[in-house]
Amino acid sequence: MQLDHVRSNGLGRAAAELSGPAATVTRMTVVGQPELGPEQLTLAHMPTRLFGCTPSRLAAFDCPRRYRFTYLDRPAPARGAPWAHNTVGATAHLALHRWWLLPRSQRTPDEGASLVERNWQANGFRDDAQSAQACVTTAAWVRQYLADHVDPADEPVGVERTVAMRTERLAVSGRVDRVDDRDGELVVVDYKTGRRELTADDARGSQALALYVLGVRRTLRRGCNRVELHHLPTGKVSAFEHTDESLQRHLDRAESAAEDIVAATDTLASGASADDVFPPMTSSACGWCDFRQHCPEGRAASPDLHPWAGLAEPPPS
Ligand code: SF4
Image 1 (tube, rainbow, N blue to C red):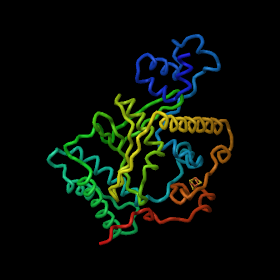
Image 2 (cartoon, rainbow, N blue to C red; image 1 turned 180 degrees about the horizontal axis):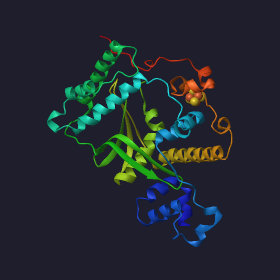
Image 3 (spheres, rainbow, N blue to C red; image 1 turned 120 degrees about the vertical axis):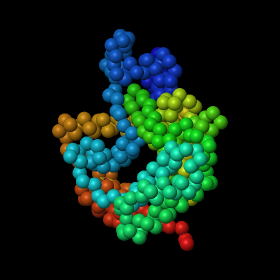
């Protein structure tokens, strides 16, 4: 009964890993250790294959064809040109990571901007002038964000912290931009640099952030419910307090996606047509897809975009 209860509740499984004896039950169920009791060896209780992934791998299955291009086809299909907005995002993240590695006395907003400038790359921009302007803009975002939102003496619990958790079906790991300690409870902080302003609904609806909460709980063995999106272009923080129920809903969807991925992968391996089991799923995201050059359906569904099309507008001078 105890095992059935654990099986019926994925969040219970995740939490069970934290709490002693149940952890042994969960782990044994996953890997099928010989210590399993006789009643657990029936076909109905055969262990499900554990799917190891990151949140972004799960999200890639929103378009099964893109998932196949990204994770299965080898050699992997060539990707399109790098995106300028990815350069912006990667550099801002790098600067905010390295800023915390500096001695306390050097953690100033200007030093954050300097880290952007020193680590800048020109990938994806129309020309040098656009790249230089984007560098100035990104450095200004980081400077303002650090000035308005960050106390350099308030050491985070983790920066670019790898966390992991698993259930009977799923082993998820990923890196959290920042984990804060706020009055004894941990908070997942995710930096965003995109054009669109974010809301609490974005924080609530993010499967990645929900899985990070579970990963933080599991890895750091501390309470964690709150997720925050820190939008650097506007300085706006969008937050959501998860409950066990909201986390369970995310976990259910993640496990369902994992089952679909495993089934499709197995079907492909048994000789099925790739386009049948990993069909294209066109959407507005096709315009930003790295593999659209290999996908007639995606090209038909969306216009070609310049590699710099995702840049935020520079602030008025
Ligand atoms: S272009 Fe669209 S349909 Fe084609 S692989 Fe990319 S996301 Fe999928």
